[in-house]
Length: 106
Image (cartoon, rainbow, N blue to C red):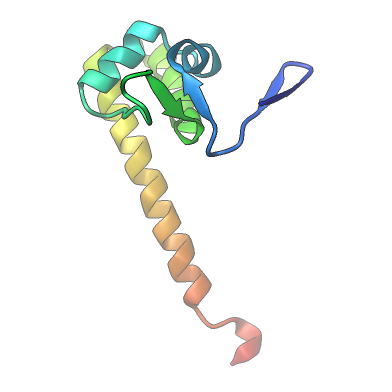
């Protein structure tokens, strides 16, 4: 992790402890534990409660939506699962678009 005037840069393979993830995403530790119990958030190391940094953008978006719409934990879990699915579908679309012939190649 590197920090520059409040910004934090994380490598996608970095691991965050529960308290660090909570500070970075804006969800409480209890909300994060609830998301783990509901099966929408999986620790990289369950014994140490460490999470991969790759979950951070999804959790930040979920925290914003929770605050904007005053979501309860079960609704928050649904939002997290939808955000992940959207990211998967966007990735698939990008891969398919990359396979299309370019205009100049015709």
